[in-house]
Image 1 (cartoon, rainbow, N blue to C red):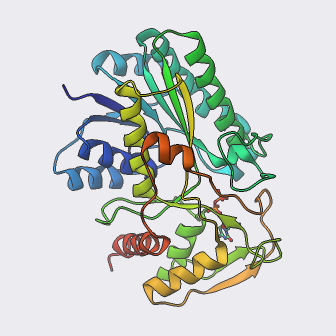
Image 2: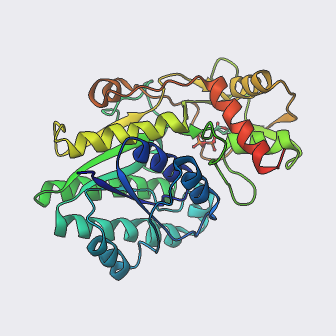
Length: 339
Ligand code: UDP
């Protein structure tokens, strides 16, 4: 019997890629999304890649009655929760928007987990590690006090899941801490669709290269790193999506060593902003208009993962090179521009 996985926020950037990998691995997937921060492009792209129309429930996870109806209608074996707001700066300006939405929606899912004994996978973030004292970071590295309400919701949701797993029979949980997901599906049918001016580096790079933005500002070149720019662990979106398939299989096949587990999902390879820009130029054979600008408030100097636990326990490893990933990101931007 095929198992059914619910993907909340399945029409978004990460959710759509995860949906494709789950379906290709043989799971039934139900997508639920309220399209508050995306349009139907990725949902349509997912259906085109898979050659079938996946079930789509248009709903808001803050609506407890709608969540109850969803879980009554479908027999869900595992739920992956992505539906959340994600702009750090906006969360500082309007914390209640973030606390209201990101916490309430997850609490509604946990209520169903308590009632029905669910497997829950939470999309967490390396942001929980703050500015790490030791690099690379392992899952044992201490979490640091969040510097934004967005980051705080990630920590709080991890704790909600941990506590519910401890308290309620039959509830199991995995939190995946993502490093910096970038790129797009090799088909160029799904990818990142930022609204307005992108906050993240790679969409800003591709939009500058296509001419939508005049110039990339590199935030800070006086950091204590080899070339003075910040270092991150950029993880290919398809590699990241595959980690979810491994985690879901681990939960559904009874392979978990503890009922609540945490895994870092990264490559283990630090890449600076400057190195990323240079790699983008080289692999796509173009010149990018960029300038150095002051540091951005809230940025950490350097962070990258020790992914050993995910490698060994999930049997997952990041495979794609940063060059291949940047080529996919560029192919997607060109596709959006009709080029
Ligand atoms: N960055 C930059 N210019 C931009 C956007 C980002 O120099 O227009 C830098 C940012 O300072 C950080 C890195 O790119 O060092 C990654 O930033 P992003 O917002 O993509 O992810 P974060 O690591 O903040 O979650």
